[in-house]
Length: 393
Image: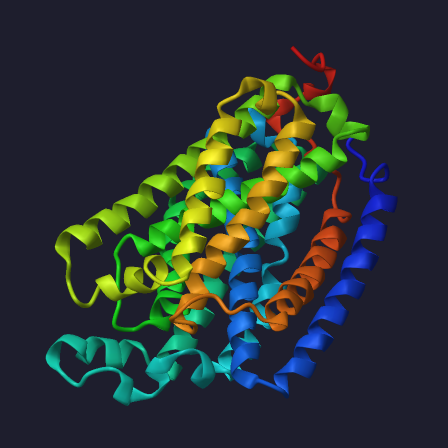
């Protein structure tokens, strides 16, 4: 009953169509590259940050599930594992960012950072060689976690050894800390250093939350599309939908808290090195985007996810998840692009083509990976006989 065969035709079509869109999108990006190289790299970075957030967040949610053992994560586990296995692709897709370093990051020109005691560390830290070395370290660590999480899960399917589940849970505790270190450091390197004069100790945590929130949105949307029939429909209770919606609600609240906390601390201290970041994003035309995010990325989903009638209907919850996928993209655009467009948003076709290009290749890879294993975990001792449970409450 956990066979992937029920979903294979749909996944085959998704893989094929996504791959075609991805190739077309990247081809159009290459065309625009020769017209405006700077714009190409800026758009590529934005699209890359958005799509890599999903496999990175999937690692965290997968380990959270192994730590807590919650029933909510059982039907999502294979979707999360397939997402984590796309991280190798994202490591390859980082190469254009490395090649375009001088067109993306102003610190590649040492004269951009003042030559004084306070900025001496930044000049050392923000150097192309050290930047590349750190990025390699992040990917090596994260790919190592992906390998272990998926290998042991596959071994559990084959052998049914209950020790494997204990091993997954035991590893996930310290591994979550290691994951958090990598993704916060990567957020500092890849995004915060776009404006090397500015800094915030909360910034990395905001990206941690954004990655988890966009991942929950993605997996719940995919789950809502797949669970209309087959094994996923048979194994899920209404309470599971409710729990998954509550988890999304919790990370939405955390996003709002961290974002407001960062703004409040910078507003209160009023330091000249910190306030320009918000002057650009709140008091130029970017302020309209910020207001849009406050209303539609927080208040609207906040009130929607308060309602049990939405969280206990998977099609409605999937609709909220799809809505959050789009709004998180706008949020990342607001975080990244003002570093290049100080006076306000200047949308370019390359922004769309980069999102479609990277996203199409990523989705095609995800669909390919999802077909490789049974749609539900086998022999997980915590959920033995779960398919025998009555569907619904």
